[in-house]
Length: 467
Image 1 (cartoon, rainbow, N blue to C red):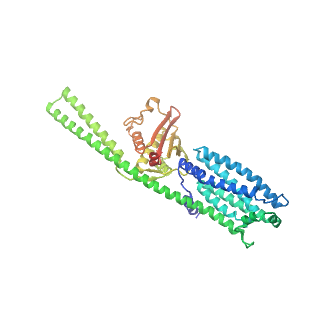
Image 2 (spheres, helix red, strand yellow; image 1 turned 30 degrees about the vertical axis):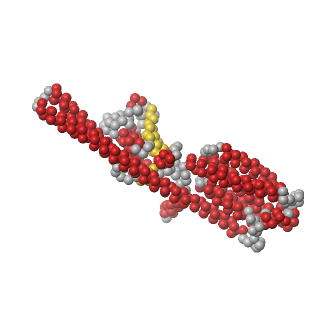
């Protein structure tokens, strides 16, 4: 029962969590939204509040608790103006902000917004004030500006809390009628527009609406992001499948064009060898030609065999799931290898659009090399994280003896092997399968300190081409 409940919670989490845009695109979109839409709206709001605070004769001097609250709000409003100017200057003059800096800046400004409108709620009628509707707008603004789930939900819950506290404080102030008399008629009419005629209207309903808006805004954002991601992935699927088919047809044509001359050379050599009818230097030289032709033909056949470019289909693959599948294949529990495997996977990694057999060959070959290098005993450290330019970076480090520097540069060459019984094709396959997806593979090694292979896979080829 507990296992079933945990599975359901995981499914719910996957449904709710928005994949989001890539960091650079998120930052650009959010900064443009803040600069072109939010800042002009805030400028208009500040001018409106300046008029009400300083030119409409709200109150002459503080003589009650509510008037003290009003004066405190005046002081905080000045701080709010300065904070808005400072943050607005950042959005206007700093063209490219890192995503984490941008989101924390918006979070801090969101707290200032919530505190300001909580103060306005306090001095304009509490739970019945028209300012309540601004809190709904702030929640929508935060949903657009902060796609990160935890930060967005925390900020919106704080807004709900600010509204609730300001309303509760307002109910404790007993001299509201005295303050109303001190307000001029025009200002009072502006503030009381939309107030409920029924003073017993339950405030709980309004708080519930704010909470529901918080949940619904994030839910809609998650759905929109998932739809956008699905459309991008469909384009990426088609693009990569077309790439592989085109490469496969080209490779098949090249192999065909090479194999035909090799067959002719082999046949002519065989005829010459028969014509000589016996041993001798010429006979031996022709035999060398035939052997090398057969070797070249075998190399082409093997290379075409492991490429399989035109076969299979591109799939949406989870890096962590494929890593675990490869680990289970190379290190089966029944074998009882004395190898400690340390995993360090970043959550919410972008999926890879590849053929499963290509990715499997890459991971299995590297893991097998690590196992053989450590002779079944040692430490294997596997990491998976996001890299720059829409990439996923996988690192596999072993505690084996390492690779000599003079051999390190050649280990990706076909038929080159540092093992006595190695074929020399394993790492050639790795490099080939990585590069056909515009990826890169690199190796670092030091004698006595082990070897580290680093794989970089682009998660978004189309976005790189159009950036």
